[in-house]
Amino acid sequence: CLGGLHVPRQAAGFYAEIASGSRRLAVTERVEYSVLRCRSDLECLAGNEQEPLARCASGRHGLSCNNCKDKHFQTDSGTCDKCAGGHALFFLCFTVGAMVGLCAIVFLVRNDITKQDLTMLTVIMTGGQMATALQALGAIRQLRMTWVEPVKSLMNLAAVLLTFDL
Image (cartoon, rainbow, N blue to C red):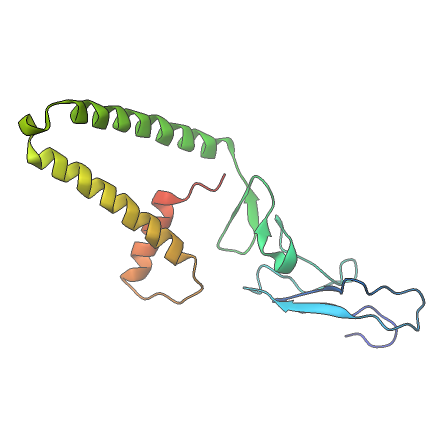
């Protein structure tokens, strides 16, 4: 707080804004502020002269700078970068690959099950279980915990394999 009649500045790691319903009609009137702790000092920046309150890192917006703007993705530096065309191409290739895989499964299922090799069915079922486990790991990774090795590497692998935040 600069003191006097200056608007207070939010500290790094905190999100401050004028509380709803509170407004300043005169310099001497009381103003209430809403202050929330952010997930990281990198997401909520310290206020400056131009933006004393509600100052977020580049590409972020919303309460506590919690969300990336549309068509942006979160980085490790606390900012959100704009999506490039390559991200959509990766998603398109993944979708085509999934469709080819689905056609292969349909082909295998349409055959007489008594004549199918149990090894192939086991591989298909194991693949489905692996995909489910990776999705669960991706969700668990979002928890704000300090992971130790080798769990940390496994969580990062799950994020790389299953992050399609378009």
